[in-house]
Length: 620
Image 1 (cartoon, helix red, strand yellow):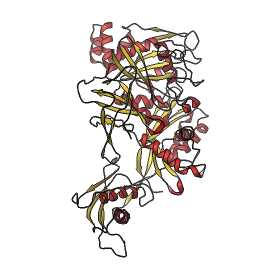
Image 2: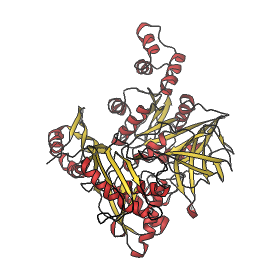
Image 3: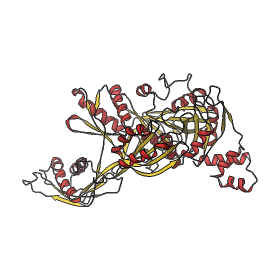
Image 4: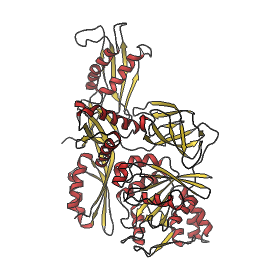
């Protein structure tokens, strides 16, 4: 028995959760089909997910085919939760990318395929809803090759498409179209097609398996998750074409935490994918975490419970388990050595202030938000003035979901201010400042502090280091300086948070027994502000990468409007019925375009954007 960890990915409403239900039902894992409409599906088990009919968090369910256990990771489809999807991708052996035969290639579908191909993750394509009116096959295949990837070929054919009589039949393994498609990515098939003899069915099977496994080719299957047509062929393709990840036995355990769920009493359940070794109950584990400022933190605890998905204990390499007993564990924590396998995505850029509707719940609200942020590093929360809490999020839908979570899980009614784009500051030079004892009128602190501020590498966050000898100050004084440096730099010279900085303690001193940690907390902001002023900062604003699909007659007005809001174009591709415009624009202008696009395109335009980093703010 071996295990495959498979992700199902799609644009929202393409039928992801319905396909998961069908797979579990057809293979005996559940005894009845759940429905998104009635809110009784197996994987969307949260009250909010049931109410909204969308997947918000990655969920895991399992079924068995022959000697293969398939763990299904059902991931969110809404673009506000793309980071949740990308975190799940690193624990997968392969993926099924779902498209609707009616709506076809959508904005989020293109984003997901780009990510899957970048990771070279084995990916099968499943065209769902073939029994719906308006479903297409050949036209959709041409669209997929033009807008997703040319390296795709169907392994099944469909008759009666667009009707309730739609049926799926397997194609012969020596299909000429398959050979021509594989020839574009496989040198052996190319040589056989060009020079002969023609590749045999066995040749094509071997090449198909190899090119699917390395992520360069994508077999396609037609079907219907609700009706069940074509699902058996898809499962056969998953088992036959996606190889299980290599596992290391007899070694120290290595794995990745890809989801965390809070439990009553403050305990956390962590979902761990194991790559090597094994994990048993009562085992003491140490997880490693790379902080935003580049430091590595250890998180240690003794496992109290191990629930292996679809299997008995212990958790072995290649499998997934729900663990409890490690306090403070977070998404992204690594068991074993830290690696660069983790996906990289831009931090959220939408900032909002949250206040409790009932003032007596203000403390409980802040505690709840900090708890949620501690479990999920993609939610950034910090205390703000007047009892409010500042949050960084990816979009308005995420804000709505968070409001519902606070209400249902914590019993707190919260009001969110309209989201605004967050700017950042970065040091432009180097600045130093120093204040020395003894106590005098200017500072009134019994402490000596000298600090140097300089720019750090892009993406390094904030780093604090020492040039003074370790031990020159008591540990509590060192800690007071470091914590105050990071807290002070949440507001820079222009009023925005400072990032990618390196602050070095270059001089220190104290007077025993008079000096206290409070002296160092009080003096640090004064010295740091002077050093930062000498270094100087520049203001940066977040940008979004965008794709706009517009009718042929709307190209000129749309590109003119995009140029007006400061968009920079990276491509314009024309098709038979529409133009695809790609580029980047300031995040603060995205909402303006979203509101104007329907009028410019007679309601036919399709828009997608996501954070893509930041750039220096241009003078107006």
